[in-house]
Length: 137
Image 1 (cartoon, rainbow, N blue to C red):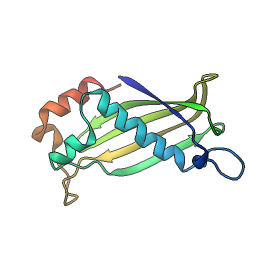
Image 2 (cartoon, rainbow, N blue to C red):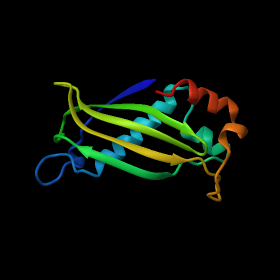
Image 3 (cartoon, rainbow, N blue to C red):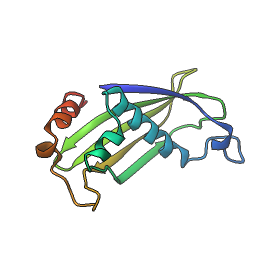
Image 4 (cartoon, one colour):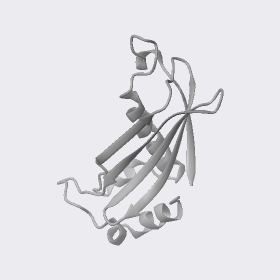
C-alpha cells in the first residue's frame, strides 16, 4: 500500500533563500510514516503501549529540486521491507501543483523495547506483523 499525506510548506521551514531547509524533509518523512500507520487503524502510541519503539537506524534523502514556502506537498509513503527486527519505509516528496518529484528517501527502523533491546515483533505481535505484511509494497 502506498499512502499519500498532503501538507503545506510553512514559512518557518524555509531558509534564507526562501526554499525548504533540507533537514525538514526528514520531518516530512516522519509525518508520512505516522499517517501511514494511522491509515492502518493504529498509531505509534499503540506500539509504545506494547513496549515497542521504532528508532531510526539509517536514513537517506536524495534532493532533486527545491520545495518552496506555501507549496502543497504530497508525502508518498510505502513500507518496502519487513524482515526480522527491521522495517524500511520509502518516501517521495512531490509538489502537488505540477506533480514534480522534489526528493526521495528512506528510513530504516528497528523493533526494540524500552531498553533498546531487539524485539521479535513477528512472534510477539503477530496481529500487527500480519497487518504490516499485507501492506508491504
